[in-house]
Length: 298
Length: 264
Image (cartoon, rainbow over all chains, first blue to last red):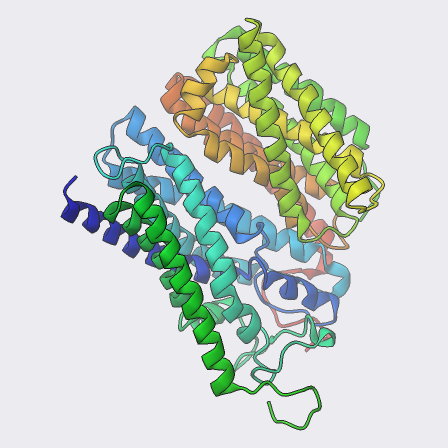
């Protein structure tokens, strides 16, 4: 393959991954999946019933691996059996995955809330109806992008990765879930769920479950959470995942063999140094973190 | 957690017997139209795994529920492939699922013992539940692999399920089938019948996706048969799940409304 074509494919995969990362994080935020879910689950038990969606499918990595593996499996079947065009096959695969997402989200919301009846947590059917389609839509975008970039990796005329198509999609699904869980969820879990608390105050154990349940007018819905997270958490997840996909494929396209390994190591070291610098910069400019004496305003 | 309506022994017996019978009829007969039976066997194995997850995770393993489901299929995939490969090696394909099951039970027991004795989680049912979960994992994986390949022969399964990558959706959906029923119903008012009805519907979803994959690997009519049967099982159990949610939520099952009285 020509170097320009290879770089073009790497750029395309990076762009698809950026969109996938963003939509993955927003999908999990609408449903309060993964780590922020523990606070939503706990809220009713400590006396704060809510109207927030409780989408406990599993951690984000397994659930996204499921959507992507199913999407790629269906696309692979269409490519092998009826020789359909790849774009259509990927679109149909992503649609089937979005349907499964809807079913799993519905059962998780109904089941979890019905299991908290003694804490006065209701099963609100309007919450279910309002949120499931938004969740499915975001899951469709994520799956479409991930299955698309996996197809580019797998196709023997393009990148030509030796792994089977659905396995590559499953691995990238795990990756996008892991990055969404570790990057974007912090924005939702730490800031949106506890917006009533002073910024940077930390979460006292006694405040666990005391999530922000009221919006500017009326009760907060999980759609508002996606609106909030789309300003920072979603895009930052997209950039993180896009960079992961782009840099990883760039080093193996631009370099060969051990040189690619060395290039990867240099990238990792540079990112570690940059992160450390960023942390020190933030501590210096937004700190100093006060001793726990109550004498410094947070 | 309510008192179980179905005991662990009953669920295990059904899971192992129906699981193995389904796999053997579908695998040995070689008739593609019977491939769906392996899927039905795997649905019962999913239920067995889901009940074991329910019992062990009710000891407060909250975030560990998804992990334990993945562990099940992790143990299952090794044992299933080993068993089928042994069957191929000795030219006796029919011993494959049994060898895989026995190996999985041993692995599950060892992992359970290590968790309890070495890591000292000290959960009384840990050994038994992990043994059951590993057994469920191997039956789910073997069952759906046989359904997609239409054969119990290791070479055919490698060619049609592993090389093509259909193992990926089977693996991850099989794991979610085992972990999702309890995870979705987690809470103090969880009931066994609701969790188990949900495990049937999760197993049926895996069967339907396996059926979709088998369009490319075995006869399309046989695949459509699997998909239609799986869709029917899913619909009946999903509606059953919704009814049980209505029963358990009682007056809390509302169309819309503000927070309950006293919570505003």
